[in-house]
Image 1 (tube, helix red, strand yellow):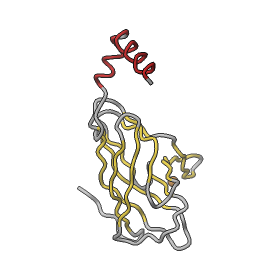
Image 2 (image 1 turned 90 degrees about the vertical axis):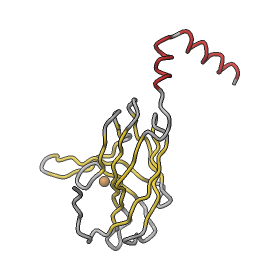
Image 3 (image 1 turned 135 degrees about the vertical axis):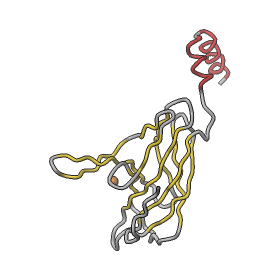
Image 4 (image 1 turned 180 degrees about the horizontal axis):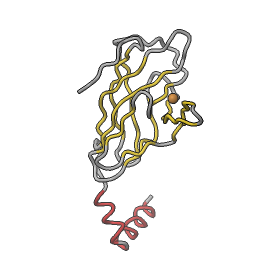
Length: 156
Ligand SMILES: [Cu+2]
């Protein structure tokens, strides 16, 4: 352990560029999550989609690397693609939220896919979600559960 620390100090002192980069390192809590919700599932289905916005208020780019929820052990990031006239979903390993930018997970576009759900999702209830990132720490938010039958509300 001590060896590792000394090695790190030498590295930092020996390389001005590297230490500048360290000074730019951001505090956790620089990724702001909002407008989170999860769709209820039609009977018999165990898969559903979740949506939210993620704003990176830090001065470094951040990648969302994983998502956790008590609802399931398997949450993926999916992008929608139009290929050969077909709508396809493509899993993404990570989602980049560039410095100063907002990424929207929304219907028909980038979304969170929840698999193997064994609980019934009830409109009006909530479910916690945590997103883990490389440079922006881990952030949590509460997802509202919304019925697929409820009319979509437009936000101004
Ligand atoms: Cu999907």
